[in-house]
Length: 71
Image 1 (spheres, rainbow, N blue to C red):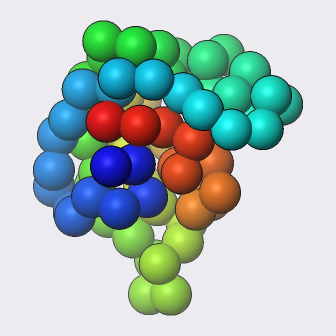
Image 2: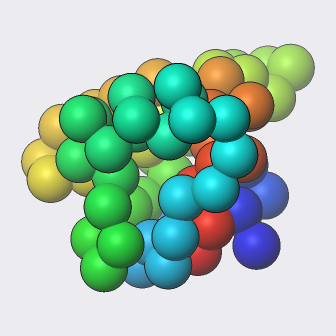
């Protein structure tokens, strides 16, 4: 399951990052690393961006970015 697939207000632990190397590197710089908790706060009406919280920061991700985060 990926971050793009979970429902609003769900909190999960990151298992791995997988996908385009540039996207994965960007996500790691933002704090998306294995073992960290991430929570979906909401979604825009057409499904993206996806608003998530990690390390107390609120970040908006596109679906392709969120699909790289496996939970």
